[in-house]
Image (cartoon, rainbow, N blue to C red; front, side, top):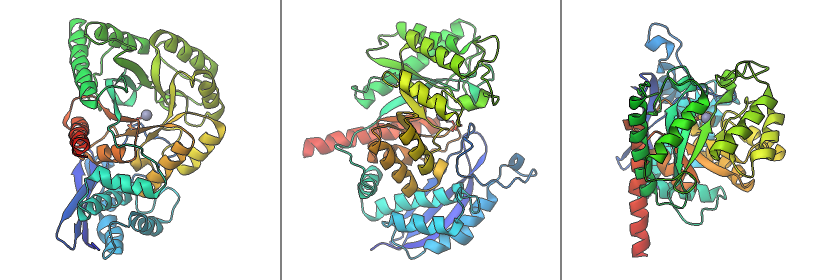
Length: 426
Ligand code: PGA
Ligand code: ZN
């Protein structure tokens, strides 16, 4: 049996120049596993707490020295001597030390860094590829994955909302390759379309710098204009919408909801829920959306139920801020049929084990699973292995550009080849 010998943490930078936590776990064999945690900008109210120092003298208050200290002095010492392959045991110990419902005492960033590093350490101890090890953990939770395969990528081509330049309200405009395609073909399509969008924006004299997730952050008039750019661009490529690729949106609507109505550039005055629902029906009529994430405010349960009832047969209605990878919220949403797909972000809940438990609940409700990065990322690619191991349907890792995004897509490319070689040898 392998044993955890030493645990330490480091304050590193994420892709937005903000600090985040990296954790290293050394096993008694001497092997070291390292993992880091991402960070959101459009965080849901119901997420576990990301512990920041709030010391204005350092990193504009965003330092994570307290979280690093919590790993070094509290969480790490408590798991020394434990067997890393007992992920449940390790995560329960970590959770128990915090004992708050939202991990506000020690910080979900501190706790998740240890939980992730432990899963990586266990894969090393077992001599398993990380995705195979995650699959073992998933099986222990009753998650059935018929055949290991690489999820369909969801490329975020245009960035608005809190990730963009400021003039688009919707946060993410997706191009999604057909699920029947090989990952490598979908990745190539995504990359070629991405480059063509850049050329198109340049031709129009629109800003073509990029936002937080690597998608372009153009200065357009309306959100629908961004969808139009995607359609126009794809027409100039060999690919066809509805055959090779599909469109989608992460609206992240909580961020332009004022408690009563939604303010978007497409409408001259703020619109109430019914107006938004009508607008989504209209957009879906024109663009045949495959994915519609966070179309409404995170606590507008009746509206969510309504949109899932009316559009859910054609469109994946995805809960991100609505669900916050939180078991209680997922339970409520399954009971109320508030959505039909979940965006899974381990740092919204804070441990590998709880993330797996949420995935099991979502699978039992027959929901689609989208595994997701955050807008603030590191080059850690473990989330790619996690997505394969749990049998996720989709992987949303941003644009097919920028190091911290392609670290994950490239990992999926490697896994696809590894899986096909394993099948040839079987
Ligand atoms: P975030 O954005 O990481 O800033 O929360 C991603 C998303 O909303 O899906
Ligand atoms: Zn989202």
